[in-house]
Each structure stands twice: as structure tokens, then as C-alpha cells.
Amino acid sequence: MEENKLIKDPRLMSPLQLAYIGDAVYELLVRSHLIEKHDMNVNDLHKNAIRFVKAEAQAVAFRYIENDLTEEELRFVKRGRNAKSVTVPKNAKLADYKYATGLEALFGYLYMSNQSTRIEELFEKIKTAITR
Image 1: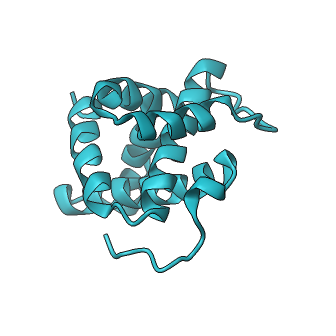
Image 2 (image 1 turned 45 degrees about the horizontal axis):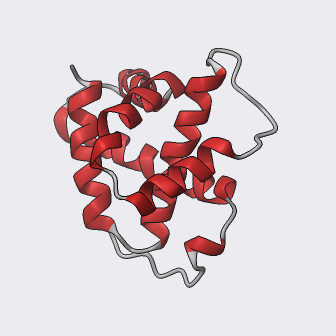
Image 3 (image 1 turned 45 degrees about the vertical axis):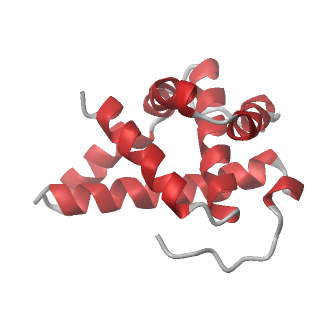
């Protein structure tokens, strides 16, 4: 993943801003993984991507990596998880949605603080959890 050239300090960003950028980072990782590993048409790629990015899967992914996170990383997850969101998807449990937001906030924080190696390391572990 290319180094982030943004100047904004992620510690000063709101948890939902971090989750917003983290959602895009996570989605890109998922799509890149699917393109690299699978020869499918775009519709099938999309269906498979949903398996990774839906709130339930992201909550599972978080639980899988939780013990590998640093205290600082866990702080950003908690900030995202506890953020007051305006909406909750109809097909998601509230607890799953909150953990998914926390995971996205973590990826947003890591991206904004130029920790691409850590992003890749955590995503490798997540792929193992989701593809089981």
C-alpha cells in the first residue's frame, strides 16, 4: 500500500472520520485480495467482497485480531466502537455494527499514521479468519 501523504494527525480526527477512511482502506484490501486470488466475473467478485466487508464479518475479524493489537490500536478501536453513528444497516446487529466501525477506525488510524506494514500484517490475519 502506498504511503499516505496526508498531513492530518489521526489522533485529532473524529472516530467516524477514521472509520470513513478505514472503510475505504479495508474495502481496497478485500478487493485486491479477491482479484489476486480468484478468477471471477465482477458480479461474483462483488458477492465475495460482501462476505468480508459486512458488519458481521468485520466483527469476527476484529475478535480474531483483538489479542494481537497494541494498547494504542485498541484505543482507536474503542473510539470507533463507541462513536455515535446516525444509522445502522438493517441487516446488521448493533453490536456487530459497532465492532465493524471500530475495526474501520483502526484501519483509518493505521492508514493516516502511515503504518502500511501493520495494515498488511493485520489483514493477513483477518483473511485467515474470514476464509475459514
